[in-house]
Image 1 (cartoon, chains in turn yellow, green):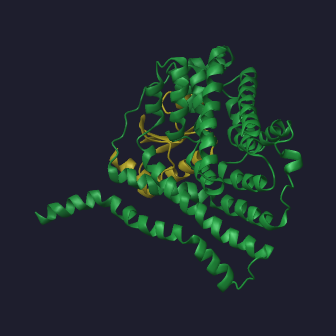
Image 2 (cartoon, rainbow over the protein chains, first blue to last red):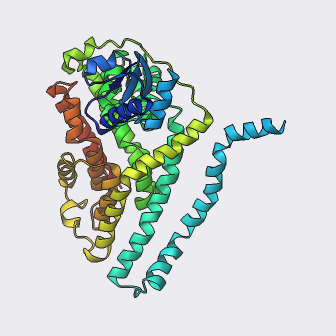
Length: 78
Length: 347
């Protein structure tokens, strides 16, 4: 699974990255988590509110700091 | 059959709890004064009439009052906001003529979920959709300035009249500033790379939101916003309560009263470098007004602190050249000066 966290330096974005890594670890799935900070790249996903979560190229959440449980749910749905 | 009924209840009963809470809320709200009196006089056993007693009474009454109002309003706004999104707002603004666009953008700024940390992607998203920068600015000015937290604090600490004046003049500043920026055709001062932005997926599809989710968003908003700002309110009202009894009335009147023409520009000069949200600044301003600062000056100060701030300018620097930032700050500051003057001299 290819997971991207879109967001610049704000606290919410950093926390989402942390929560995502935690969710991945708890699920024990094979996944790479990368943080995308380049605004041009973020815009390529058509996202206007950060932080956003992208799983395998698809935007699954935007504008909210998800909890670990919510991320786990999103990841298992994919 | 019975099972079916239970299933329906289960999915639609999210509104029951809030509805049950409402009478409790009303009951507490209308009995705050007697409760504050009871606590100060009977529990703390303080002598009525002394400065200390009145300060404590003020604190015990104001803090729960403002917090109760905040919880109620943020809850409802949290639900209302689920009907709006930056994507929808962008679609609504596309192809609107300049002035109509400015009015619509300012109004949408109130209800669209917005966080200043998302200002850049939002700006890029709007520009990419071909929305004129003037209209985009109207949104960016109104969104942080006119919001539910400011509204609640103004109603709670100043009364409904001042709250309405703030909202209406704030919207006017946003509409007119954006319109002026649009008239000047300043697109050339937007950083060049902004126009190269291509969003690959276009509008990502809207998720289906159930009614239960919307109700839940209300809870989430209360938890997030009240959890973040309650401390500012307690501190702000505490400073107010302290000053309530001790600092002489008219203390600030000589400097920032309506007799001095320079009080409004001075308030703005102090206000711009200050960075605070509505929750931190409004309780302080309520003290200033009590000590002789005139309404126009107080409004100008609040607006300049909330609408114009150095951190925001630094964020915008990524997408705007300095000329446009300078024009943006001057136009908004000028609008705020006008608001200050109008209320100092005409009211």
